[in-house]
Length: 124
Ligand code: SF4
Image 1 (tube, rainbow, N blue to C red):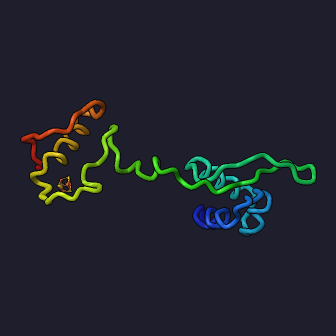
Image 2: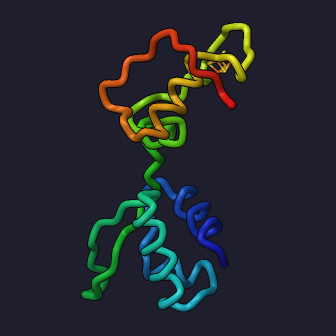
Image 3: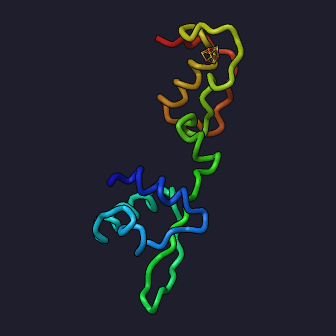
């Protein structure tokens, strides 16, 4: 049973899944289930709420879709949005000033407050 399969199972239950039911449904032991849940929580793919069932403490797990800000995380470097995303200009990456400046800003580690303007920098 993989983390992905556990996530799919949780996704299917909009009312949430009790952790004490999850490991039984997935035919894994509770320790392995705890490790999978910890991974999903760490990756912010699920949330949980404490719940008591027949006097036994467990958690109800909910699928938590990534927010838009996280979805585009890979397109952002040092607070600068990758210039090619959504670009409709004639493309010659080797001579693109916007791309060169973005790469330069990352290379010098000074993205904040950097202004994108025409530049003679070229992608090597
Ligand atoms: S390399 Fe320059 S022109 Fe090409 S898509 Fe990226 S930003 Fe646009």
